[in-house]
Picture 1 (cartoon, rainbow, N blue to C red):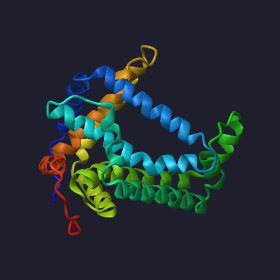
Picture 2 (spheres, helix red, strand yellow):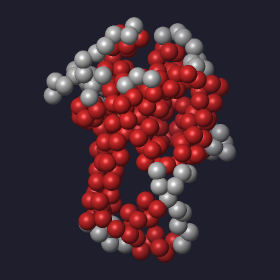
Picture 3 (spheres, helix red, strand yellow):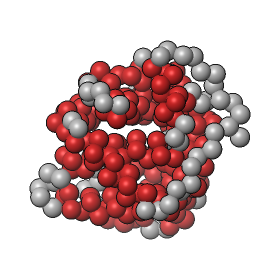
Picture 4 (cartoon, rainbow, N blue to C red):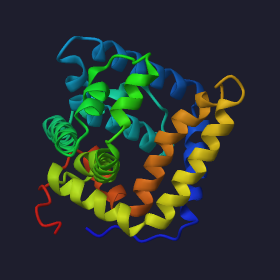
Length: 257
């Protein structure tokens, strides 16, 4: 399964395609995402286990949003039930994917602590706001290498997770292989991804101007455009989606590399 190599301008096309998907059910998209964020905030508030559990379930929730995008693309209606698709199929693989990402985060924080970022990591992982700017200044002082290492490693992890949930669900690829393929696809399309990211940063500034109201549109488009991006880079996914709808069993792809 080879990711497509696309031109840089395609990064803007993904946003346009995502906006078109959003406009097919704008109010329901806003409601669904509000439910997601309220649930995530409530779960994260649970002491000790809340945040790790939210990280484990994140891929399954993301898949639910992608299934909603697929329904709209196929001419069906967006439904709240789509949000739970990742908890009905491929759930174990998706939770495993979330677990791998969670372990990756801990390993990155550990690496940052080893190169002088212990104080900074403790602040980042405490979950408590720091009101004294002097404490933040002291944490950053001398942690330049840790910050650089953290940005680099978290960027790699983010690239590996970009398409992994969709590859696990729609293509039934094993979690680790899905992360490798996602990273490979991101690097192969670094030009389009750069345009995509810069365009979103500009749109984020514009969305923040009218009392943050623009985020009611931009936030859903972030997810719908991700689906457009996935389908463009992995066009074979649509065939697998149809087979999944018909209840066919896939054999996990263990020969991606």
